[in-house]
Length: 279
Image 1: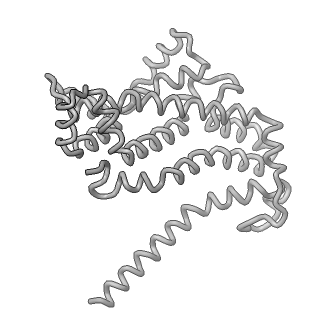
Image 2 (image 1 turned 90 degrees about the vertical axis):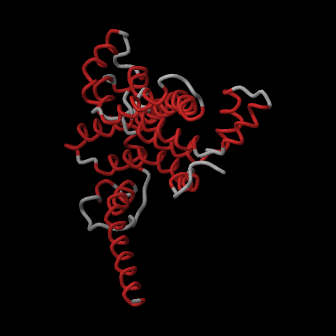
Image 3 (image 1 turned 180 degrees about the horizontal axis):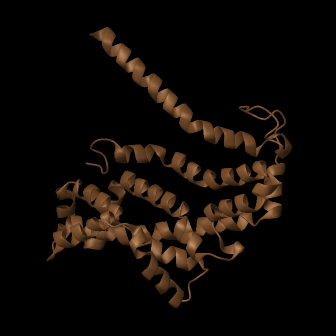
């Protein structure tokens, strides 16, 4: 029996290692290509690291297209969308978890039910509203319509707030602390893992907005990096600028990878069994 368990464990580890290799290989190839002289990209066999690393691909990419603006626009959109989602979902989740009011549960499940609605069904009316408000070809037109999609964040944070001991809030009420102070001083410091997870997921989702950005943003200098990569590919594919293209793609994933690693430990606490809040 023990030998069978060891064999099963070894087989699982081999499968996971193979899956990890298949997942990471395209990223490794992108990293290698980004630092390989463009004329050598297709003339040599695939290598795990270039023989003559160079930054020329990055220089070429920035010289040919406004890559810096694309990155800045993506950062602005991601930060503001994330801030907007947190500003709405945190107090909403706390209210659903710790306040009593008529229709609370019904309203909560209506918000959760929005998770089942395909976002594509609201594209046309949202586009019309954005055009009438004068937000077409602006970052505002990307940011504002992206904020209300908070169903998952409200649901997840509500569960984290409900997991906190009721005694803490009872003691706060005896000290005449209002609901805002209870949320700010008691609830939020005890659900940091959940907040970190929601922040990272929201930032990642905003950074990867593609279809809506493609629909709203027209001017080259207003595009985000996800759209910029597509523009770069369309323009430079005929010139076989694969090295610069991979350089732009690498720059496009670095911020979200850095954010993930910065919040990795906290996020693991949030998604571990029984986690989400202290106590």
